[in-house]
Image (cartoon, rainbow, N blue to C red; front, side):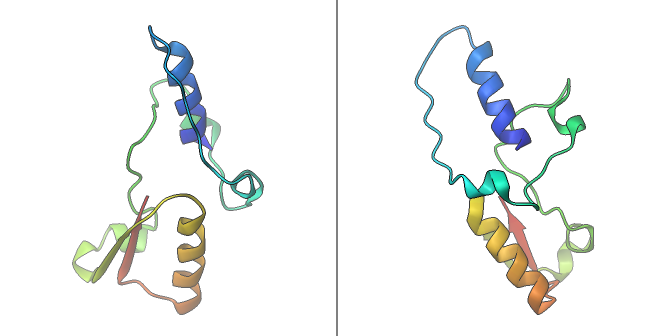
Length: 95
């Protein structure tokens, strides 16, 4: 949600106008795991083109990663749930 907020804010703050097309399923807005803190939307924060692995057990031990997956949106949350179900620490997911 913070990235969506920053995307809209950046669109309004630009000196020029160009069309903004956001293709995203609404179910991400209702997903309990898809949340951001107010700090993520505050001053000094901006749109992130890439969001690194968020699990500290995986991010702090990159030498244990055997598979790196790049994905976006709903697929991220499906892969995250499956990784947790299988208790895999050798798969990093980057959005």
